[in-house]
Length: 117
Image (cartoon, rainbow, N blue to C red; front, side, top):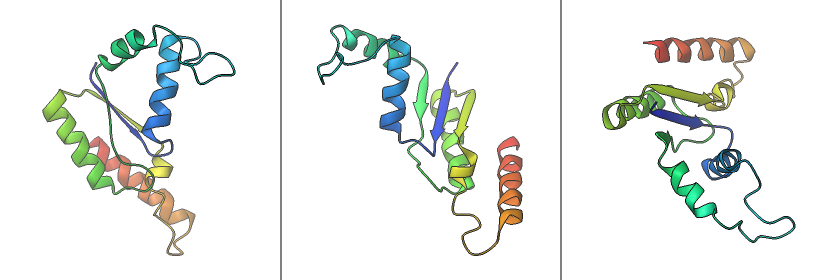
């Protein structure tokens, strides 16, 4: 299924490296070296063919901008699944002006409400 992944806590480069290693089922480099395991290119090609796309946001991001990216993914890739990891990091700007936890939880509820719409 076409999936859009929004990783607000972990940068995409690190996330994709870890996902590729999990997909491959073993380390990507020979132990103790930076030398790449032979055949990894073919595995990377198969991984790249998966219907998986990534948002370019990282850290605090406006909910409406994220929803715009989701709408575009539906239009451009017929995306059906969305992963938001991690909502708290996405909304990390909330509450910095002295609002406190109540405001943070309210902002999370509002974001979820917008996503559901």
